[in-house]
Image 1 (cartoon, rainbow, N blue to C red):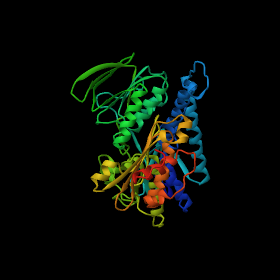
Image 2 (spheres, helix red, strand yellow; image 1 turned 30 degrees about the vertical axis):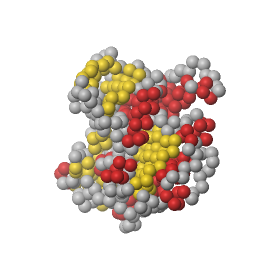
Image 3 (cartoon, helix red, strand yellow; image 1 turned 60 degrees about the vertical axis):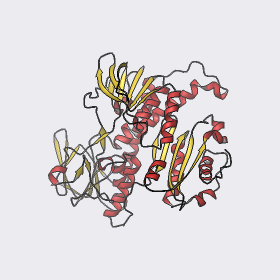
Image 4 (cartoon, rainbow, N blue to C red; image 1 turned 90 degrees about the vertical axis):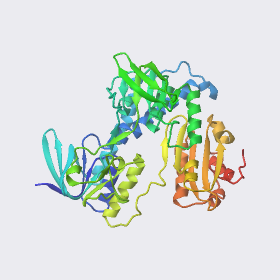
Length: 464
């Protein structure tokens, strides 16, 4: 006889485990099914361990530039195995934290591969043994995986996905990064700061293509100044691995093909949703290019089946999945939450310099028919940034000229991934330029640049 629950969550990534916790808080009997580790890709192989690596490379960068701060560090070096071990320990610590949360909220954890076998029915298979589960609602939160180049599958030795790049056995000497979204740029930044010679190839006309054009241009110059080689409007035509390295044929924007040798390559060209083999087809769950189609409450076209997170489409961000999970569960519980929307989801890239944004870019705002006012303030005009030795970067704000609505905010520079939330809150509260102008920002802080950028949009910047 099947174990019966109010809710079964298939997948324990940020969206899945948060949804399970919220459901338990609202009195539901919950089971969560996971085939690998609790916390999913983000916690174990994505957001968290990459930030641990990037923290190491940031400190290493400061060590190698100690003289800029009046300090002396003789011949800094690193132990790659120890660097990786620290990153894994951070991930493991948080994995144990999720286990503790499941226990605290009395959520049953069922390990194995889950597949929906009928209305309200799910079978979990592990080591050949099957466990039958049943529930009123099944929530699919199976996430996504890295997309391979069709002509060059990742082998884990010379051609890597993000998983391989997180646990390198050796330090790349000459690294090719295919793709310049957040994942590609973060790994490029880490390996460059750790001493690798890095080349980025981006098919679109600019790196970080979803960001504001000014931010992309600044980041491009910053990475090039650090020693990276960047090809935009270019593609990898061929990629071959041997025991000693990688050979890549790169076609530039003018159609010229150049063949170069690298020690390793990281492929970061997007993701593929994990929708295969979990029973969706038999039930007639609607998908679009592999992603599950849902409404603003995570409901699919099939009663009793909901979905959240990367498996439902972009933006492919952990915080988006978490909030989707809460909205979905509260709707199931009759709480009448606001339907989930993506208009105010911030994007963050933890490279050096960092990049963060929310809302419309200047170009997108104009395309949408807005007459805009744009403010921009550089890090060099901020006392705290200069004191930190981080005087490169800027903050840009985009307002609707007629209403004062904050349409978007875009940042590049030190710690902007922390600063962006101020503008996210402002947009959520429908704050206009007037409220932001009359808000007092503490001094000396990097956040003062947020104020100055708003003032600049209306001709009133004080410190530049």
